[in-house]
Length: 248
Ligand SMILES: NC(=O)c1ccc[n+]([C@@H]2O[C@H](COP(=O)([O-])OP(=O)(O)OC[C@H]3O[C@@H](n4cnc5c(N)ncnc54)[C@H](O)[C@@H]3O)[C@@H](O)[C@H]2O)c1
Image (cartoon, rainbow, N blue to C red; front, side, top):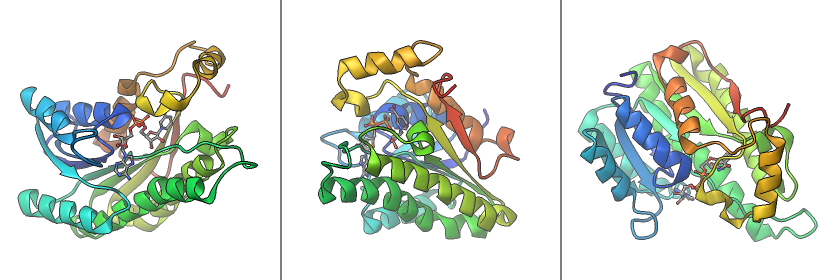
């Protein structure tokens, strides 16, 4: 098991890629902190129970990544229980799509707050602990949209490009302190985040992928698990595209 005993925070861990990543990390032996917005809507505890039922170790936290007090409470609790934080997967993210011509400030601000500032908030909250340990891994959810842009996604593309900037900077600042930082750039993945996208657009996207299908969330989770593990010990500051060849 590649992540045996690694205390790993997965933000947005109750749905889609975060859910699959929480399960994968637990299978690899990690102690998983599953955090998400609220228990009624998403129920991070359901994921925790799923992990425990399969023999893994997990703790659930209601954490909004825009809320620094909630993040600090989670980090404090994890340190009290386990004494360390080994991996942060900054997975939580949203879309609020509109063309530039129609985008509202509210749509812009919401996406920046969660997808960009939320990533900063969580990394800022764990970095001291990782530096003191002399080890740690920070992984950010970017997107193919952060590399190439996308129609109707001014706000989202900016955040996904931004989190690549974060990992390149953190790789330079923190590499000598034993911390690696990388981003994952999925293409299109079959998760609830795509529910606002018309079926016709999804079909057109699938058609563009040489493999003629979207990714399963498990296919992204396995990349996070690899990057979190010592198998990726010399990968630092990278933005790894996982697109089935979409951009070729
Ligand atoms: N699905 C795709 O095609 C795709 C492609 C590229 C990148 N991504 C990125 O992968 C990540 C996960 O996406 P997904 O498709 O699994 O989405 P999803 O909507 O299924 O899951 C996102 C989770 O994040 C949580 N979340 C939202 N705002 C939050 C906040 N403020 N604080 C804490 N949690 C919050 C949601 O409650 C949800 O559980 C996102 O960052 C997304 O941008 C997804």
